Length: 362
Image (cartoon, rainbow, N blue to C red; front, side, top):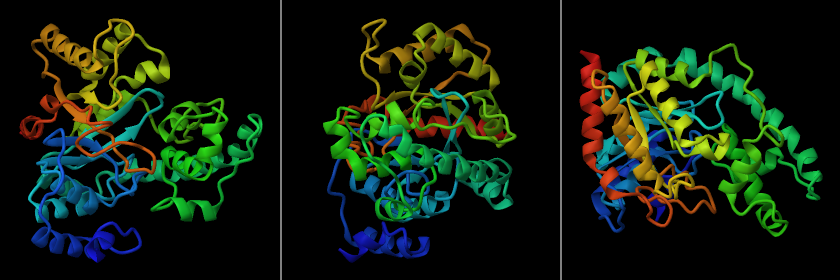
């Protein structure tokens, strides 16, 4: 039980967590299951997740998975720990990142399946010129968003605020993303917000209030191109594989139809995008077609590849997007209520990504 606590302790060092991982790997057999062999989109406490990188890898091991990608928001801080933990547990860790953009419905994933190449970039500080200015700008942005909370919810008849004490109580590693604000609000006021009909759960609160300009959201003030195309180009300059995360958010957050979504896929592919997160827990029924959105996004991917025979074909990825936040209801390698599709979560996805990056590195 002590190692269970230590492997997930944000107050200790990564090496201490890895020591706990070594002991667990030697004594603890897999005792859970997953819907997928690989989950290529999850978050640790280096952004707005609740688990350490070592704990996420241990969870994948317990679920008999073969690979995972920890894609924290705007940072690579937990990747070295994840790589070392994966070596201990005999899994494949794909270094990854998820960048917010200036489009509310678009986040860009970056995959670096060639670990040797990633470690060289990381060691040279190649990511710093993008990551560090964003990190500093987000501190200002998030403080401004916290200041909006009392006035915003007073209009709804709810007295609310987030203090430093709340941050220390409810978060694992301080506030670093908008999602952290949602977690604290839901942990502190969830029952009140639900009773008032303001939000149903932490994800609903995030979508309806934290990310909306008329409520809590504030723009990131930074002298940097934050367009989706710019992040695609940056990831390609690092010889990584840029991908479109949860495409259904373009409908949810921007109200776009399928025609507009397909055009965005085409535009991002021109900029250098390599993959689409075809399957994710958000994928429900498309209101335009009545199709399941996973099949719809896969059809869009195939359509692009068919219509652009001389371009690099877009690859398919999956993503449970689990943060292990209290009340979230998501599981690594499973999604929500095991709604991730096994056929889109095969280890062969990782092999395809690895082959593509090796091709780009030639």
